[in-house]
Length: 196
Figure 1: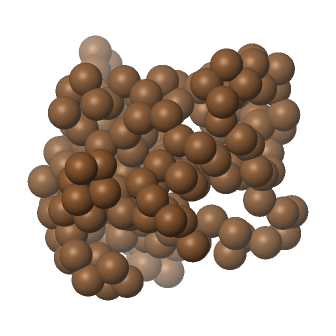
Figure 2: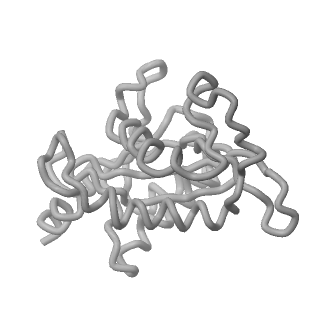
């Protein structure tokens, strides 16, 4: 259990269930990745980075940059005490280690083969997928059975920038304001009380 806001933050990367298109040609580019950070105390999202890049030190550093600059945009975020990242190669990087050392952040990677070590971020990805991604044109759904004969590439309609905008807006106006089943309160309210 996390005793206060930003004590523990889970970071993970998720392959989004939507195909994006090139803004100039309209041709399908593929599925983007969302690197995301969640505060385990409040369940508030405290950092995001959406790109076509697979998980790497670059995407993790981009999430950390977003996390520590969010307060200047009046969003939940800041410098955490502990980050629980995935156990991928991207977290065994000198640049990432130096940034965490400079910011006095402890990296505590999850154990290999134990996806339950980051339950809050994994649950958020499911909520995001069902809450918005599977409702947009070009969704790939979660599996081929759900997709059926739906032509995800043919129906793809949104650019990467548009998907970023929709995801950010959904996080800030729906997820952060909805009652969380385990806390019984909206993440933004728990966050605001915690930082006061």
